[in-house]
Image 1 (cartoon, one colour):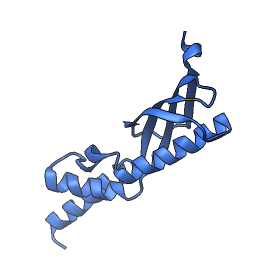
Image 2 (cartoon, rainbow, N blue to C red):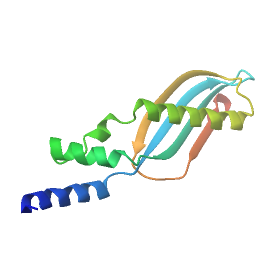
Image 3 (cartoon, rainbow, N blue to C red):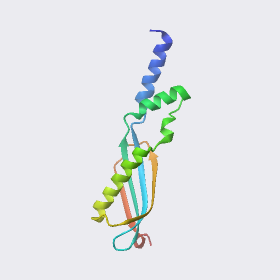
Image 4 (cartoon, helix red, strand yellow):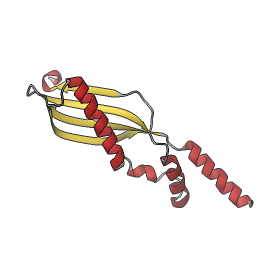
Length: 127
């Protein structure tokens, strides 16, 4: 094996091992409860992303020094997972699925693995 190939291989292994293995997502929504109250709901959860460090390493090699693949996150599939988990958690909290979402927003928070977080406040709670 040539010396240059070994160096490139070593760089790939280092980039792969340092790649982010989790993404923290946030689901933020306004809703009408079954009682007709206006409420605000926030759900945050960290998700494993085992395949993406490889893509991160490849994008860093080909595009130079940074993980470009992480800039496209959250992906459509990640959005679906977060929405499903957030609505399931909301169903359990309200003990029903008879509410109306009036606004929702999904976003990436960071790359840390932290415990699940939920916040639920009605308009009366916020006064």
